[in-house]
Image (tube, rainbow, N blue to C red; front, side, top):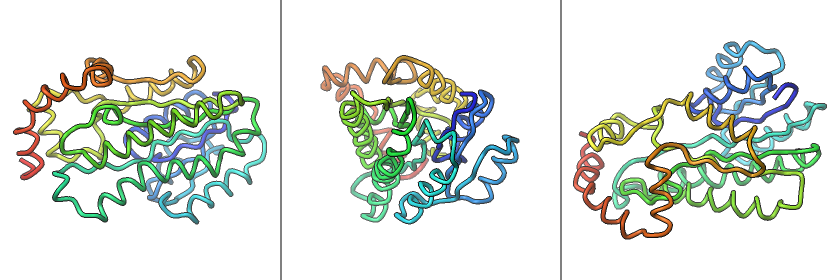
Length: 265
């Protein structure tokens, strides 16, 4: 990564921050994108390189996305060679109780914003000898899980976008990959999600582990995807081939999921 310029969204989140630190250790120059200006400034100070650039932007806003693209255009050589779409939000609750505004925001932040930012930055990536796009998805982008209907929809969509774009750019200099963490200990997970996972025996990874997996994808084979965690990566395959098996397994968990989704306890 020495001398490479990377755009990282969601840079101040749990996974984003861990990725930023890993990239910084490898010598990359970063364009760090997040909503909170102060947290971005603190991250830049922590990374300690004067080659990093912070752009405070709400990527659900058209003008903010254009501002990120404009900042990247003004960088000069070396231009950006890697875009990591790591920004995202999570909502846990019964679908029938969630507001239209909440669902709309979930889909915009997790799905539409990374699609539109990728479109803005694609011409800059194409200027490089080799460009790379990595979309941070979720195991829930392959397994529909009760209590996360909107979140699953957004990540299923991001996975589909990644697959389609990879095939569209197969004869170009751009590689496109999808990384799917399982449950991860970040601020995206509320206390009741953590409590539910503990009761169900669902493992939760540290963000640093996810970041290490992302770094392996960056240095790995062309267009490699990665599903993180066992047995979750196995269930992804089972769900694709024999969804009835996963239906039966999740139905047994449904009373517990409903209890936490309704009461948070």
